[in-house]
Image (cartoon, rainbow, N blue to C red; front, side, top):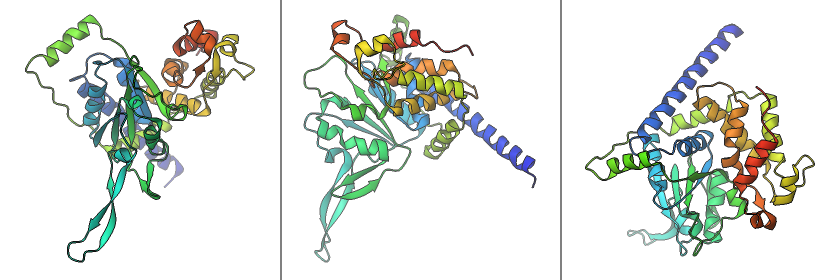
Length: 341
């Protein structure tokens, strides 16, 4: 078989995979829309995290459908869903699982048996993750990065795909524990849920205060999602676009010579290399979800804030001037606009 023929077959197969990816994306949105009203940007960011194999932190006020969104997505994806309600007395073994002693009734022999915890699922909802102490929060670190957990010295693998979708309440500070920076850096997005518009709230009333019961159907499966993650990585990105993403991330570091003056004034610590990796990967997924086959500067700029807002630490001067991470990132995008396409 000639090289040309092999190339055309590969190109045809890749085209079919891309078409399937885009159809599944549209089907997932259609299923989610049966239950969730509005929040287009939030849904897009959570789906991007799923398609690149990342984790997502969802920050929103009570009653903004954070838990409902995650549960609905898991149903539409056809994945195994588990929920952990984080509380101050939650122990690491409540997440990872534990060993118990079982006795054989015939021989009387006792053996250790591992009972898997809720972490052994495809979609794990860590509800109100900031309500448990750092010791328990850290039980997620190994799983999020290595797809494994260690219990009593024994190593257990978690079957992919594996997504941690964590929620936290931004207004209640009493009885909460800030997430460690190392754990925050594992989340690809810090997605913000805001109040709905008046029209959307009217739609919510129509869906939830009547006898209407929405049924969400699975439109894909675990194997297909793993394939989509590979397809996303094949999306090309021009060196100029990748360089722009790197320059934006490096500009958040006060120690970088190219950092703007306001970064040096207000920022203690900037984003890590992982931020640049996630920014490029997420931009690839966003481009493909929007039926484009290459990454544009607009993809990068649209994702800067949700990817970087939890990765930069502001100093006292920023707090004194009442500036948030989003304010700093907005100024950064104004100071470093995307080149003309």
